[in-house]
Every structure is written in C-alpha cells, then in structure tokens.
Length: 120
Image 1 (spheres, rainbow, N blue to C red):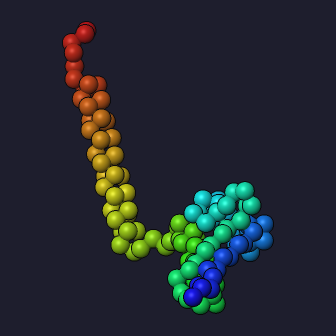
Image 2: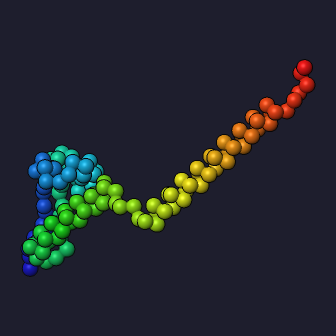
Image 3: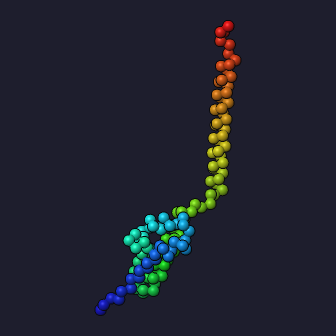
C-alpha cells in the first residue's frame, strides 16, 4: 500500500505580497520563520490532514495568522483609559515634586540673601 503525498506548500513572493500589505509590516515579514531569503518569498508547508485541499487551506490560514500577528507587533494599539489615568497621575506627581524642589531652592537662596553677615 503506497501513501499518497498530501503535503501542501504555499510559496508567496514578497515582491507580490508587499504591495498588498502596509510597508510598516515588510521588515517583520522578512524576519518571520517562513521567510526564505534566497527566493525572497514566504514558504509555508502543511501536512496536518490526509487531504491536500485541507492542507492548502491550512497554509493560507497560517499566512493570514502571520500577517495578523505581524500587524499586531508593528502597529501599537489604543492606550486604555486606565493607563491614560496612570500616566496623568505620574505627570501630576512629577510636576508637584518639581514645584516643591523649585520652592525649596528658592527659599534657600532667599535665606542666604536676607541673613545679615555683618560685612559692614
């Protein structure tokens, strides 16, 4: 009994893919584990199933997942309201600390000026 080869391979040239995705993602695609530098393409293999069509679908799903993951890494998400409030609190505390330090230094200088040293 011979086994039928059901392995599927998907080769996508980056020359063809790059115009379709934002340029911000291009370096991340080149850093992916599917990148083949010799051919400047992404090569994705799948042999999960006994059916070649399902393996080909799996290759396309992996390509889709790769692009989504790369996009999540390259494009920062929205800052949450909680994080925004934390940053504002840090900024207020920093400003308060700065003002206290400034008042302290000012009062130190003022005390030097007002103290009569008796140099007359």
